[in-house]
Length: 270
Length: 307
Image 1: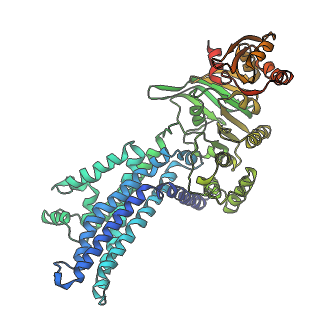
Image 2 (image 1 turned 135 degrees about the horizontal axis):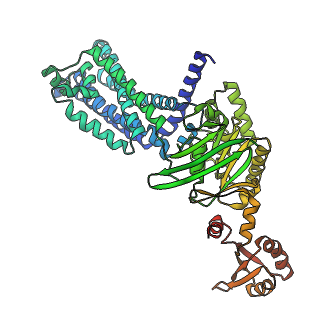
Image 3 (image 1 turned 180 degrees about the vertical axis):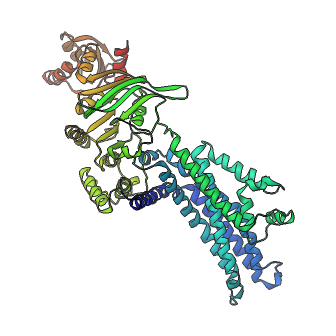
């Protein structure tokens, strides 16, 4: 069989596994919870827009500032982290608990292909839940008769989409790895996301580079408290280096997760 | 007959718990019954057969090849798990074609095989229904369907008859026997002796992670029959029935139930006893309300055998 044929077969298997994974992943309580966070963010956007609409309030901020604040705090440090943590750690564990993993593991496909399919489902579901929230927030805050600001900041929106996508890739791979490896993966993920990253990313020195958030802050087009501190202590990483690091880190985490899936025995309780 | 599945000094333990303890076996084509009470190690052994678990010690080979992480080998294996677990929101057709497509068939072939297997397991009408809406019997059938849709050489069926209604059970038993006759290697587990007897006479008898006996089911039957067998009967007149039963040489004792409406008979030849009972009831105009055998499970048989 040719390499091209193998690749096509491999890709078909990845898609099939993604399709099967979506069945267990999307239709769960997690999705309701994430949708509530999204609605909360949209609610904040509406509130910001309402305040700006009443001139007598003299709102001390612009649409761009509200959008930047939402992106840096609510979206990147909250929504993206939660969505990748919840779904990433559930990628394998959900099928272990649901005992459906058997159907995949008795097929003639390498386990790394299973991991890739699951990861594809994760990226798809995260993008589906996060990107429309960003777009809707942007529309709520920017649409008015004079569309000049809307068009002017559209490029920033594109960059935001790219950064959020990179963040989903990196965090998704990390939490996918934790989920494939550890039993209490949600707890471990929470400790990393809100313990390690929350503390280390504010510290000066090299340790900042041991967090994913550092590289995201380094390419973030908006000013937020964390990146302001980073700017202040002059420790932003170059944009290209940050993007390359995030991509390489994603590949490394994904390869490690695949290796764990290949070597680990998953005991389905009777 | 050539050996399909071979185990040598095979052990599997989970932490401190030994599930399979230093067993060796040779399984050839045809139907082999894996018989043992709950917790005997049957499911663990089946997971070792299908590469879901890695042996802790010893080795297991399928067609002479190691199984763990040997993906191409799984083209030749079909597995029907014991657990009632599915991708619930998928339709039966989606479920089958998704799993079939992982065997590298072209899309037209996947569609044709899905169609054939839906028909074979009488699921055509339910093809577009979500699996969550399937009855217990339909769920059992679709589990069997996914195991054999790719026409494997080896079929490993973990408690396949559990939850099936009598008609489907009969059809499934016929199907399993037919696969055996076709030259496939079919391994079926159950903790119910007569289920296994209906499908095959070749068995592997397991208890506490070890193989107690290997070979013909009739030998096991003989062993069982050498031991007294308890049969509980509830009927319209237990005293009269007892009076008639004590005359037979195989009946060793009769005990009455405290409520006076039932009795427990101890017989040395349960098969003869069961054959004789309907005529006896008819002759003496007795109404049978309930008949069960506390010994008609393998746990009791194993108590006899390991004594």
